Structures are given as C-alpha cells and as structure tokens.
Image (tube, rainbow, N blue to C red):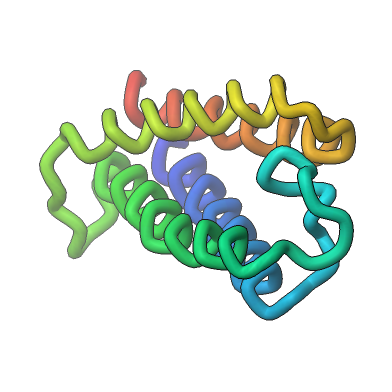
Length: 123
C-alpha cells in the first residue's frame, strides 16, 4: 500500500507543479494562492515564488517515492523526513491563510498530501 500512496502523493505533487506553472504563465488564480493577496494574476514577485516552489515540490515527490522503495531512487531516508516536515508546514499555512478560497481548495489537498506522505514515511 505504501507504494500506491507514494505514487498518489507524487501525482498530487505534479498537480501542484502544474498549478505553479499556470501561475507563472499568468493564470488569474491569485486569490487562491500566496495568501490571496492578489486578484487575477500574481505579480512578478509572486511568479518568482511560484517558480522557486517547483523544484521543492518535485524534490518532495521524489523523496516520498524513494522512501516507498521505488526502483532507481535510493535517496537517504532523511529526505523523506524533510519532505514530510515541509508538507506539514505547507498544510498548516494553507489552513491559516487569510484567503477563504485558498483554505477551501488547498487546505484539504495539502491535508490529503500530508496523510499520504505521513503513511509512507511513518509506516
């Protein structure tokens, strides 16, 4: 079951990455990200932040896949723990954001991601 949960987690990470790419490209989703400070497209600084998050989320997905024993990925176990910690922080921030729509969308998504990563790392 751990491998399936890791695959689902990685798939959700890909979804987050595609969301960030859309923000960089100018998608009008500012209200649903980065605290909801911007209506419409996020400004250049927000696009930079979206771009910086892409390798972090990619690292998280790959580290959880490695922790599940995916062939070809033999990363140190601590990388999974780092991913779990970042995921916990992301989940908490998405639940306390001032943006209602961000809480409604990303709160549940990041909670599911936390549960999946937690199962893989802790079980």
